[in-house]
Length: 408
Image (tube, rainbow, N blue to C red):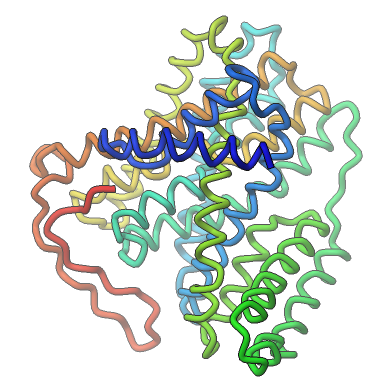
């Protein structure tokens, strides 16, 4: 009970301050996490447990995203997921591996295998941060949002073999993909869908029972995928896609949304707690340079992709910045690499701080971008966007006409 009070008090005190400053909610959660975490006031010390619990916010967010995508529409996104996603991972991973591999050789050295894994890990983006930023600006159902979602989905899938590789490449690596368990997980999810468990719960006409059934479906699928060595978030997303054409779709979104918001807030608090201020004090120059290099390399690559995709000029830089920060899966990959002696503790902590700081910096940079005139590449005084006509199978969501992005 004391822990819940501490978390609620920290969020209620810090988040409104950053909101008033026009920075959005994410930096507020991160600052609150730093203050109550083990590096500052030490009010909360079990950071790993907090991160594990808070990951359910990402799962539920991906479930709600899945509800917006029917299987037909998801298939229509295959080029964004597999082509754009793979090109982004390869380009950013190669460049970041060269930059950070060379820099971290000064910290007791880093082998080339670890440098490649490091670069690919840093090429990942935070699903929680990116989708939250797009949702705050009602851009999720625009071409920008569709392209960003495709990249994020591929990254979620790519994180799984990277975790396996960290175990296989290390001196203690014995990991192997659980193909049998993965097949069982997919089968169980499909069977549960065919049994129409939600319809059974809805017949009782009790709101709390329907909410319990919705949570059982999402959490159960995510746990099965996690047990199989797959991404729990992908399990939640798959269930959402399966329910996209269900008559209970809006009821599901209404039931899950409050849990998603609370757990996402907890996720950002936990990321703030993971920042090691001792490492920051010793290596602050390297960390600042690392954050700048991470954001610059990914933003340049992503901006090039945005031009190739034909996104409007005033959305290209936003697309690049939304995906420029590090991702939550990076923490797990760094820890697995450390466990298997691919990197030392100092290297792991420096990389983790770089990723965590980038998550806090990107929302601030986007707020600044919204104050830059459109003719200088910013987003202030945007022209009205032309709607995109949906094709016959409704594969492309319409662009919402807007004059100016709303404030967070």
